[in-house]
Image 1: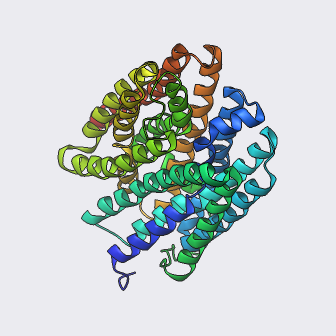
Image 2 (image 1 turned 60 degrees about the horizontal axis):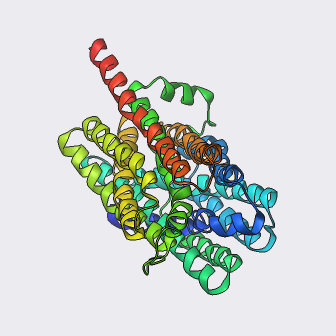
Length: 404
């Protein structure tokens, strides 16, 4: 490990991550197209989006947890290979609700093979004061990959149709596989050679400092992935009220920019957390993000430029706590169980990512679907999940203080 420069290792792992995420936003980016072509309700669309995160949630305990005992690079390569297969399968085989549901579920398993094993590799090759910073670079790169996925899907769909958009994402995932195979350094493993044990997960679940960030991350993920699932559909709805149309900015382009500003805010949020106290900064960001989200949905009838600007501000806030939460979990992990801690962190977090988009879809249909009130309540639903985060952090802080 000492022979690998941490900056170089982090750079190539982040590059592999970004390429491997090429298909992650293809469905939400083209959601209005699929709803029109396949006659999907908001609830049905929510299920397809949620299936992606269900595949992730169900497979990440094994795929991330095993990286304490198996080279995480191999798991990452497996995830990229599955990403190629599922994106290609969607381009050729998707015909409606059930085929889309199954293929997105499998694609979520591919994501589980890429994201947390990649984070384990980053943390393996950086220790001490720099580890938090490099972890923030990696988690912020997730937003870059997702933003580029929105942009690529929207632009290629406009030129050639949605099947070509998924084909392009399959090519990007193949490039990720090449980067992993040729350039990503191997991971650190426990010397014992023992298999993954249930006791490892119990140890992590009993580690209160780590679980404070795990549950806080779940609150964050409810809001973040509900936003990422529904933002394009919301902007398309708002555009219908505007006499100027999209004003030169397609909804997928706005979604790309919202994720791009999130990259910077995630890194900046972690730096602020290191200086001013991690839990204090995270709680403040969550409160600001929830307030912005609760108001954004009711802005739909306003001029499209204002709504797009509101989406960018929300994109800035909704990701500002992401790296700080994950870096906190990494730092608080029990000795020798970093991979298992990331497995628990990601399983619970993406469980909330599964529930958030689905809950918004249900609320949209409950309030009439294509109405300003429905979208307002949908965004309130996003924000409400995040508001749980500061309560969780306060509870764990108070409990820890009482024990000292």
